[in-house]
Length: 288
Image (cartoon, rainbow, N blue to C red; front, side, top):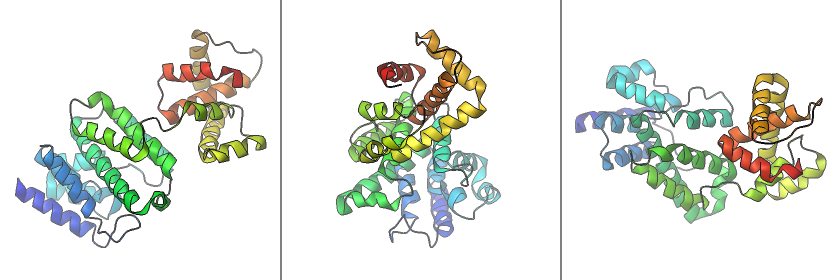
């Protein structure tokens, strides 16, 4: 067992040679090695430990699927592929949402690798915050609010599997330690977003800016407009769903379809169930 793990460490060290952790001088290999140790500590299989050590080789180095398969076999390669983002050229939000969406039905070995990866990332961030303060978030292409959304969404997707893998509980604790809670956006902030259901006007920009929500609102508004213009079936279906729950819409107007597009975009971004969306919609109906 140790021989294959040592082989993976050497392989990953060579693949990541010259790379460092984001905005530090720490050799990158420290991260996959720590992920492997976490998986070993929680008594995962040899293939999972090896995949943890190699989890960034396909995504962040010149290593190919064929090379990985040749050295470590098909199962390890499958795990590394499963833990990698499929297309780094896609927008950040789209790539992260793909990861989140795949978690509820993922096989447990994939969940183990992803959980250990995210846990070590968050532990590293928390250690850096303790040393340098909130300026640490400036290192990231996306700041604290977006990172909050990403990590809290991952935990929420994983919570139903918590009994299968104890490290999920550790990840939940770490999200709360770094961000303060699992709810990355307050009810008051959700209410601000609902005022943008029909578009963002100049009069709204100051309020959104004061709460650090301009970028978030713009992304949701952009996606909502795309849905309204290009996906009639999805917006019609969302209107029918809300109508069945007792919401009344005006007839002979595009407004309900604009609103439905907004609801779909907001729900997807927040990772809400249909019932959660309805509760927020009902609470904010007077603002629409």
